[in-house]
Image (cartoon, rainbow, N blue to C red; front, side, top):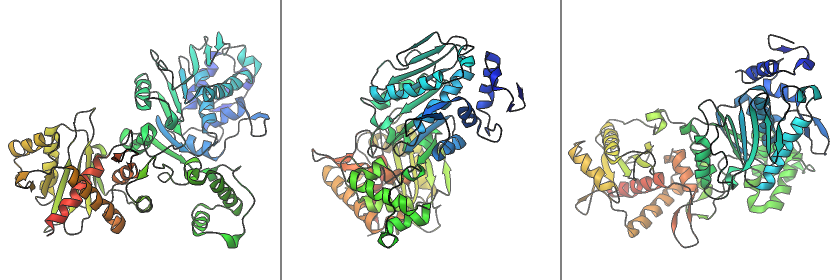
Amino acid sequence: MRTGTHIKDWGSIYDCDELTWLGEVLDEMPPKLEGNATGLFLAKKLLRIRDRSGKIVPFSANRAQWEYERRRGRANVVLKSRQMGISTWLAGRFFLKTITQPGTLTLQIAHTQEAAEGIFRIVRRFLERLPEFMREGALRTSTANVRQIVFPGLDSEYRVETAGDENAGRGLTIQNLHCSEVARWPGNAAETLQGLRAAMPPSGELVLESTPNGAEGCFWEEWNSADDCGMVRHFFPWWWEDAYRAEAVPEDSLQEDERRLIEVHGLVLEQIGFRRKIAAGFRGLAKQEYPEDANECFLSSGDCYFDIAALDARIRNLPEPIATRLGGKLQIWFPPVPGRRYLVAVDTAGGGSEGDYSVAQVLEIETGLQCAELQARLSPLELAEESARLAREYNEAWLVVERNNHGSGVLAYLHGVSKYRRIYQQDGQDGWLTSSNHRARMLGDLAAALVETAEIFFSRRLLQECRSFVRQRNGRIGASAGAHDDCVMAMAIAVCVRGELRR
């Protein structure tokens, strides 16, 4: 039936041995079979979908599906526009893995009951449209009830559930997990996701996928922390879907941003026509529903405290750090220069593996240049040691420690353990106290700096936190629900104290 990676006779695929061989080549890296990505090749041969016109046709991958398959890893986070076919392909890929890898449990989690039923209809169609000889052989099902299909001959199972089900995934070992529209999950999405992750073995395949829904919440955090967690980021803008075209616009009517899209991304006038149509229909939500940029599409749910245009412009032009340490927790853009003065501003958190982040910002005093940033979950002793190490490295820098909350403990360790002496004092007392009056001044100074001298900031983590730092309806200014502000507050302290030390 097979020679190497070539299939001679599809009609012979009816027993577990043949299906298992297909499962082995399905995840080969690089995944190649007869010149195509293995999974996509099998999908075209075996799977049937309903196209946009309502016809049942063989699966044929579009650009986004090809690109996902080319870059996928064990853990993936997918940010996309509407109707890119990613959920369909993930259903197809995981269905193929379920029917070719014995002992597999695949679980897809949708944000609503309606969405779960839609995904399951796709999976049922895959099963029902398989060749009859396959369905009557190893793929005979013992049950196919509400959103569950069991293949007893393979000891495999496919389930589709909703994020609102508190018991989703409990007591299971999940080999393949697709979490759909995570940005719109009800309740405590982070807690639900944590429980699902705990049910996966290290070899499992995880996909978090969603259209954007505000600069806050579980999906926003997962997207921003992907590098730290070893997840592969995938971004699919709306123009990757060929169907998104409308009547061509006159070339002499093009605006500056439209010309930029044509020049940078190769868009045509019919796509610009579609873009204008979407902008008219969705107004302020167009960037969210049909994203063009992986940062700007996360719209703030409240009135952003900082200037969004300045933030987004800077984010688009950020260089990568010249060095990283501590597994990426410490990022460095400029090393210390002999003779120059620096400060290290420290925002202290609860610490520990489950607490908030502690952050240290390193600034050059004369220019305000952000040289390095440490963001990590550390105990007070660990934070004291790392902060003192940074301060010594940067020419015995002034060490500015927020003494609110756990800051007093960090200061005690700096004196007693780290033996660091160049500690900033406020009104004769070690450390910086963030009072309500100081907080307003700190944030105001940072907001002004982000507009007037945006080029001195280099941290993507910082600028992303700034985008989710909003004015709430109750008048409070702070991070949106589910977002962090540790980098913001450390930088606000740094900017404010730098103004004092320059005098």
